[in-house]
Amino acid sequence: MKDTVKIMGIDFLNTNKKALLEEIITRTEQGKKSFIVTANPEIVMLARENKAYGKAIHKADYMIADGSGVVLASKMQKEPLEERIPGFEVMTDLIDYAAGHQLSCYFLGASKDVNDRMIDKLKELHPELRIAGHHHGFFDLEDQEIVADVIQSKADFVFVALGVPRQEFWITKYLSSFDKGMFIGIGGSFDIIAGEVKRAPDIWIKLNLEWLYRLIKQPFRWKRILKVFEFILRIISKRY
Ligand code: UDP
Image (cartoon, rainbow, N blue to C red; front, side, top):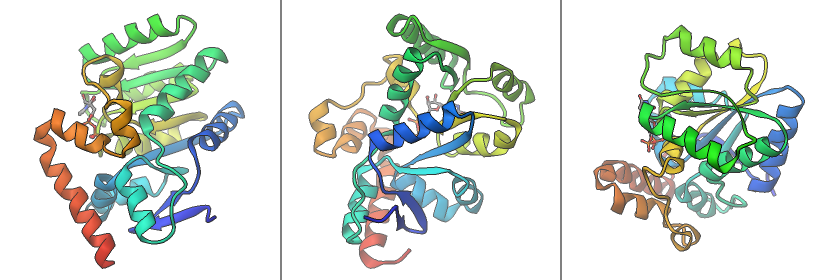
């Protein structure tokens, strides 16, 4: 099995969620820094169209396939990725681990209301979790106070939910200012924890239809789905 699979110029890690989590946790406990990108077809397409974004995500230590479309593309290329690794699950599993092992977390992103409600929910679910800090996601990327707050928090895990491409731009802009910590962009995950948005029922996830569930619930996203079709067509016709 290959360690990575190249899909439209991006090297995806060929691993499973358990092995990935073990590696990230070990690195973090050793005080090493890491940057994780949880990529779906929209991200791959954006990296193709927006050079600055492409450059940012190429800095990732771990590029993981969060998107059935990416796994499908790997199968079409006859280099199947082991499994889809949903960013949402990476985040919740790391929170569970952090709570049990005195590691601390910073939560950056979403609206103030969602961010506050998510923190209340996490305190309820994990009273022992060390919350190093949190802040909503509607600020200027140049804002130095935000990054200073995250640095002084010395968080082990920094969850960044600013949406694509802001979250990867924020992480790569400031990564060198940090001595340690794991940084991951996780899109709309805070909205799910806060109960603002529902994740698809398990059966939809098992059938690789989480994207369809999201489209039905949030039809204004239809334009994004067109990008997924364009992605698949490019894979079929090998026009990268
Ligand atoms: N968001 C944010 N700041 C912004 C734009 C978006 O914090 O300037 C948040 C938004 O409130 C939501 C998340 O980022 O919680 C993006 O969610 P979405 O489902 O759009 O994720 P994407 O598909 O863009 O990764």
